[in-house]
Length: 482
Ligand code: FES
Ligand SMILES: [Fe+2]
Image (cartoon, helix red, strand yellow):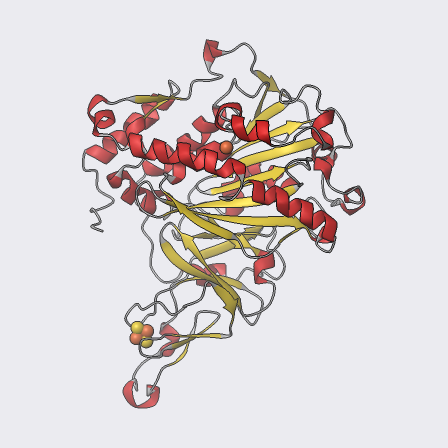
């Protein structure tokens, strides 16, 4: 694939970026930004080269030597836990000739040996040695050679990596959204754990489309998923309790990220988890977080750029409750590889009956489930049509105006303390697209900045100072410009 010069403003892409910023003020956006080759190349650099990108969960790297292949943009990184218990993310590219040194998706190893000429690296990224080192590399300072490493930090067990040297710390990047992540991934005292291997599948849709959808698009549900909703048996389980469902919905948008949630009036809902969940609740949760969780039915959100969350209630037809993390890996213009992790509270990880129901819930949103194929068909169509030259030549605008100005009297700004820090609106599923505007605004803010420069080769060494034993908590990452 040819890669255009980046960091320069060359007319087309730059103009589209600026048009997006201006159009968003009116609740619109150029449809041509979806599945756009030139913009895609800039996204890899300006969004994925700059943002904190989700890489996995600490429970996947429980033991020294555990590793898995994960991506920042299209770049293949290997997340490892070294022998001292620290987490790293190394680019899978040997420092000799650039060969990929890791051939498996995941596993456990203390060393990686490059298959080309045999250079060997420890799982902390340092060079261990190479064949004929004493004879052939007499003057080599092996201390100077180590794998290229991303900055890495964690929050509530969520592992994030960043390529750029400069930028906000992870905690600053998450901002007020951390309140919601603390609730969703620090629900119980022991936290969440990933069960099994994540699922992966590829589809011909733009990563932005699914990041937008999961950020709070309830509007599509009764149209896109109408057939699925009619065939699934929703008449059992806590759904029954929701007299006004699906009316009790909220959107919480911080300056970068967005989450939607449905609440019941019943304070004992707890998403339909087994009743022991109340004993397991994390004592660090605030009263507001606890109250919100006790009434929770469904959460779905997006941490910009490409991590999404979906956490659903137990229901007769669907199974559940289930928590899922999605990652929308860009794989070319208009192409995305989705990774889907299933998580449960650690305290319930041995409860077979709960696991069976929870797994069924997770599977209901997978390529084999009724709902995923509904979405994929639509998203692929968006990618197909949005790449149309017609949109580019006619400067066609898509619409995200729900909830703006005089569009709806129904949207109400909430200051009820049960909601976290964010601009929270209610009510109704269909009257606010603030979530979409938030996510696209984040895209615009990153795309309008020049491609970030790095000083090369030092990223991980700074991040490696962070102790990532079980969870780095909120501390950590490098700080700089915001
Ligand atoms: S490319 Fe890895 S040892 Fe030569
Ligand atoms: Fe959907």
